[in-house]
Length: 239
Image 1 (tube, one colour):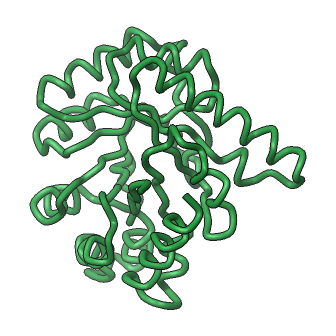
Image 2 (cartoon, helix red, strand yellow):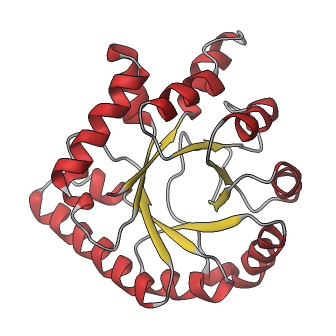
């Protein structure tokens, strides 16, 4: 069974729109967990646009597995080392982007990222790198000492034609195969939906899918538990 990580950032987006106490990301996370989510994901951004420090600390206490998405930034690294999430996923971060726009350039920042990976692992934190499905980036990721790569599925999800989708699926498949040969665990995420997840699920090397926006959008209509259960049922049937 492919594991499912549920990102609750956009629960915080709604909360922060009014600076209100609700909806509460930790409460939403517990509902997702009860529905079968294997891990909870949050991205503590430098500008704190949605998830807050308080959320991360509470989630670490409440959920069975916390995956903290984070930039390779001094302040955020310090927080991660203090909170000690179960997993840290290093991602690129731009102040003006609506969401993460692409993968981390590991090959171009090998020394900096390797130092961050080493620091996090010393605290007992499992480390993943969010990268584009590019063989050069996969190889560089293995060189950092990271234990996992999360393959960016945005180009696949946004493909406007079957030909383009097939091309992107092939890139993801080849990157996943290379990662496994290098003893890296493999996850995938970004832009995945109930409609497009089926082909990604069938890639045998992918062990985990990380999905946020589409599940939260569905939860607005049917509730968090039902939205998570629907995705889990789909993953199980398609695998």
